[in-house]
Length: 503
Image 1 (cartoon, helix red, strand yellow):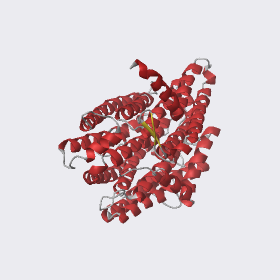
Image 2: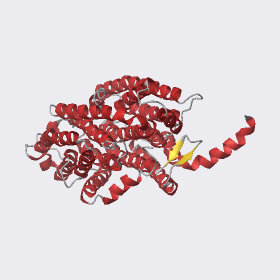
Image 3: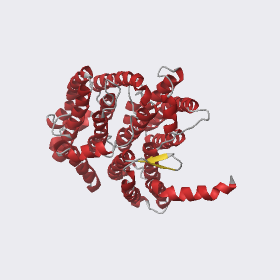
Image 4: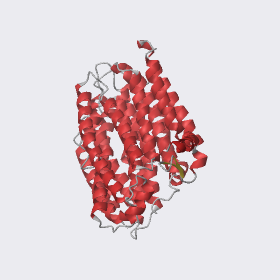
């Protein structure tokens, strides 16, 4: 074995550039922790600058990988794969992180928790997300998932003086540990199915699973346990219990981050597993995904109607959006069992644009936070049009996109899902998808009524800092651009799928 060390070291050095985006994030995360000790209390905002540099350098490294991602490029002995699927998800993660960093500088200063560890944990969580998108090995995927999850557990309870934040973090940890245990059990079954000898490589496992009958007890048990763990991570009903409490209790910037980046990363893992390892049992998981999608749409929309806290309302609305994305996954399988690229394109486009308009909605909620006022109740929106017309107009655009009204990106995202459902013969599901837009209209336009119709209950005008203004500008620009001229975004979504999914 000693004789193999030089060859192994040479191979590792050759593959090192392919994990440079993750290395940049980890390096600047550590740098943020170290430089934080050198900063005075009134200089802590520089931590955000250091973290943003990490995102920028990681983005440059990711862009340099684009030429080699035109086909599946296996590295580190096949443990990671560099492809356009990973490239697109990587840029979604980095874009969401950059927006949240811009929104965090002022918000965390108000909260009095402007330490470097906040930004470091954000960057470390993105390292986990990156490996979730490029992982091709069960061990890599599980470690990546826990890296992301552990960072979010701490970030959720980052407001140490807030009982809501501490309670949310505790619930998140307990339920997250339970779901991770179920997922690990499912992974162990997949490892057993790959033997003898056992393998943790997804391609090997996919071949072994395909060689077994679809009604094989162990294959079905692996499918159910892995699906349960993944449905928890994306907050799909009936595994959504953690989401409303975590969304409400966490710092609003972290709520935005969890609702977008964490969910997108979990969907990357779900797509990778369902469309490779479990592709041979697609006739078994399609009904399962259908049921979870319908439950998520029904429960998320109905319960959102009764909410008076904006963050809880957006939590339940995000559960309904999970339902739409899962319907896109259902539409990725034709009646004859073949792959329908339009369904997958709808899923990728939905995840891409959702990152911007959902973060934008939370950004306006963040503007309402000031000393002594949390700013996350519906009443805090009262008269926003009179107090800050710009913020009210931006929130209207984001809410229109969340509902699915043209000319916003949300309209096209839902239209693509419904179109793909009709193409694959799921007409009833398409009709349900249209019907569930009606309750969404009601609870989103409750917020519009508060902003535009009701008299202000507070005369203080919300202030938009330069960084917050930049984040809002980017979010609204993508929301409108993807709805008015969607061709570049659709092309990105399509190119990300040019690898052997469904084979």
